Length: 568
Ligand code: C2O
Image (tube, rainbow, N blue to C red):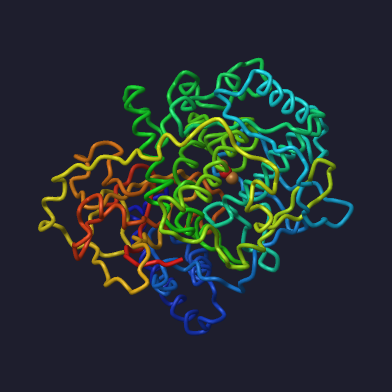
């Protein structure tokens, strides 16, 4: 928690605010908007000079909220590219980690080669769910991890270096070319799915090579279907290389997992928990993910500041499952619960294989059968040409683009073994929970979510090419040294009467800790799809919707709420 200025500091505080305003005014006059892609960085520098807590003041000259991306507007544009020369010490978490860490990949003696697709004649690897994979299959994964752990740390294929790949792209170690002040952060952006697909692709091929088994496929942890909703047994065996002591001891099998987990255990029966998990999956995969940007996350170009906005699945269950698996008794929730160390847990890879499977399912099935008949992918070259560097099974440095990662079939792997149990798990509504609207207090943004806040948001007239009506939660600021959760309810000002996981719970916002973000504050946005929701609530004809933001954990500020129509 950030400190709150004590009374006796008041005079000093006022002086600081005066200094802040004077400097802000002067700088705003001197620096024209055009050369100032991120007004926030100015306010940040002023904050540094004046020593103000960033939670106590917002630079009023911050870029307007008009585009829904807050002040995340592009700088120079162009695709994000990776340069290993631009790697340095990661930003350390506020709480000292159990051991010091570095996460830059080893340098290569030669230039990276461009990615080429595997031979189409290669056998198709079938990734199978851990809960029903054969003992032989799980034994292979176990052996692959053991072999990777046995490689010297200098080998880019070693488990140590593989785990570090994730750290480098998430913890401020890699920086943007030409913009050393900007971290290269692939989370909370449209790079989330393709980056992790590439990461697993090389991890799997390294495992296959070490095993001498060219057909080896990763098992996946299918936490979205009832049979997969617990830690697979192989990971809980203390003698196994798949075991990790830094996991929540209360979540060992047969404990049923909670896809909306945040810190506290609930007291549902297994049956109730499973049902709620299926509702979460349905919302995040089907009703809330009806456009590419809602599913993938927001655009992130070269020169943009980090974390413009995450897609549905990344917020939850991706982030929540990281927190559920990590050891919550560690302040940073190592290993799984924080970006820098998540790759050190052998369960990370089956976890992300499931994320990848959900991407595949969305692209091929959900989008066409339940979506808004949109395109599958962004067509923006800044997405398609964004690139990452990985070492392959021959320890060659390879440059891979998002474009290379779109089609799992071309990468010669597929998923088998489970269906989509949540496909028709439409959550129930709780009628009569929005009765007292006339008593709403007026709210002026930005607002600190110290308690639930309810706002009536008017719906603009739909344009001719209306596609999806989207609620944008703008200018979200969270304490980056903490993990944070808030919930977004629609037409439920008496939200506590909504049955847990019910339909009026329209969206769930969750972050992991973000060491080193600007001035200790992570700034982002969130989007909630409204078409299906308003239909389910019988509210399509209303002129406005009632939005209630409910803090669950951590310090959050909200810049504003707005409804827009998005066509993609
Ligand atoms: Cu890159 Cu699951 O996090």
